[in-house]
Amino acid sequence: DAMVIQNPRYQVTQFGKPVTLSCSQTLNHNVMYWYQQKSSQAPKLLFHYYDKDFNNEADTPDNFQSRRPNTSFCFLDIRSPGLGDAAMYLCATSRPIAGDEQFFGPGTRLTVL
Amino acid sequence: SQKIEQNSEALNIQEGKTATLTCNYTNYSPAYLQWYRQDPGRGPVFLLLIRENEKEKRKERLKVTFDTTLKQSLFHITASQPADSATYLCALGGVSGGSYIPTFGRGTSLIVHP
Image 1: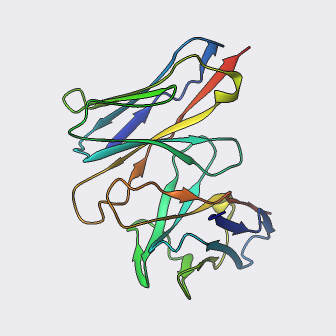
Image 2: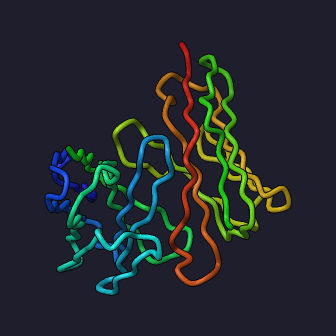
């Protein structure tokens, strides 16, 4: 089945210790997104890729970086995690068509100690 | 600034009744509106899309309305079941550049009691 996969499902890191979250897709979609979602809050878009073109949201902290080495894979790097970065991180994909559905992965729950 | 409002209080209903969830927005003229379902600890799953020129959409037990004058969408689940218990998020997309990127509301939790 075509899908969006995120690894790991749960990640524990220490304050200030870099962490990388990964996402892969078998849908061959042009667009990949990274969202941050905290409890009972809306998913907050951090950035997205249209193919290789990277688009950063204006309010995404510099602490967050991303890489997309190919169509299938996308990575989220948090260079120096703070306690406030503890959240669910969601990867999604879509075609670049207005109204087209987004396909989400199961998410990675990040805990910062 | 643009604002999407969904009731933060959980909606509790009895099995078999119709659940109605509301999505209101301000300072926004979306070209389309989507509804997603999110289960605890999981990513959202797409349910329905309705465009600005459509008043109503149906899919099985689901119905969505879109009133661009009231700036409101209603999401109905008829004959609700305990398995419908989840958080339902609305997402709005505009006509400007990057219009394939919707903005999400915080969602409303639905609890269907047997």
